[in-house]
Every structure is written in structure tokens, then in C-alpha cells.
Length: 162
Image 1 (cartoon, rainbow, N blue to C red):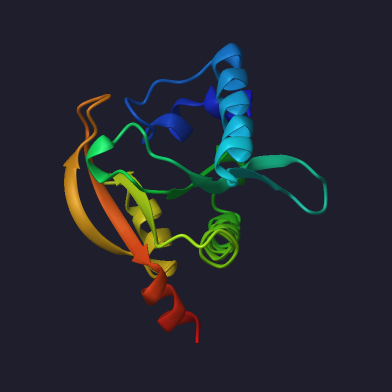
Image 2: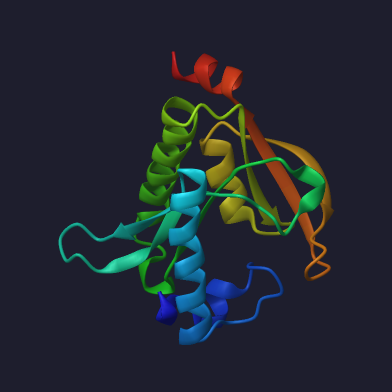
């Protein structure tokens, strides 16, 4: 995960675009693990089945960095650049869909959001594939960048999965 977080192209759309070193990544992973304990949900590793190589992550987290939309649970993902353009975005969308299903069916969430910086068309395509729709555009207060918030309610989820 540290190698993925150290890649400027991967991190270009994350917060202020800064890369993260091994210590920062370790702290992030520890926070993700704590979220599983405190919230009953969190992030899942995305691995290449044939090799077991870590490709990135997907899953659910609380978007504390954007207090204006709280309470909320966000579905998110990050893939290492070496896995881009290999059909993994489709698989990542399927993994994100599994996280959404887990959130609604196993954790009883009422809505799930996804947040992306304006201009990150690849992430917006995945959000649309998940059945999400844009509900607001605002500014991420941690870095000043414009973000778009997408949302899927449990009612919309039930309607689209029938």
C-alpha cells in the first residue's frame, strides 16, 4: 500500500494530491482497521487472484474530512497505477458494488455516498455504474479542492437490484 500511496499519479485525485510515505500509510491502515472495530465496516484489500498481489483497496468509511455531509458513509477505492488499463476498474467497480451491498444488506445503512474531485471522470464513471447520482458540489475544506458528492439511498439500491 505504501508503494501505491507514494505514486503521484495515483494520489493526484486524493485530497491535495500529496503522496504518502510508509509511516503515513501505516497510520492510515491502522485507522482503517480501527474503523472495522468501531463502525463494523471498513476497507477491503483488492488483490490479483492469480498472484495475490495487492492492487489497492475498496470499501466503506466515514468521510470525516467533509463534515457538511455527515452523518454519512462513503464507498471509496484506490488502485495502484500498474493495475490501470487492465480491466481492473471494472473489477474495482464490482468490488465497490460488493461493499455497497455489504453496507445496505449487512449493516442496514440508509444511504451511501462517494466523493470525488471535480474532473476525476474515471471515478465518476464507477459511481454511475454503482447506481449513484450527483447530489452536490462543494469544496473539500482540508485542501480547498472542488469535490462532487454522489449518493445512493437504500430505497434506490433496492429498486435497482430487483
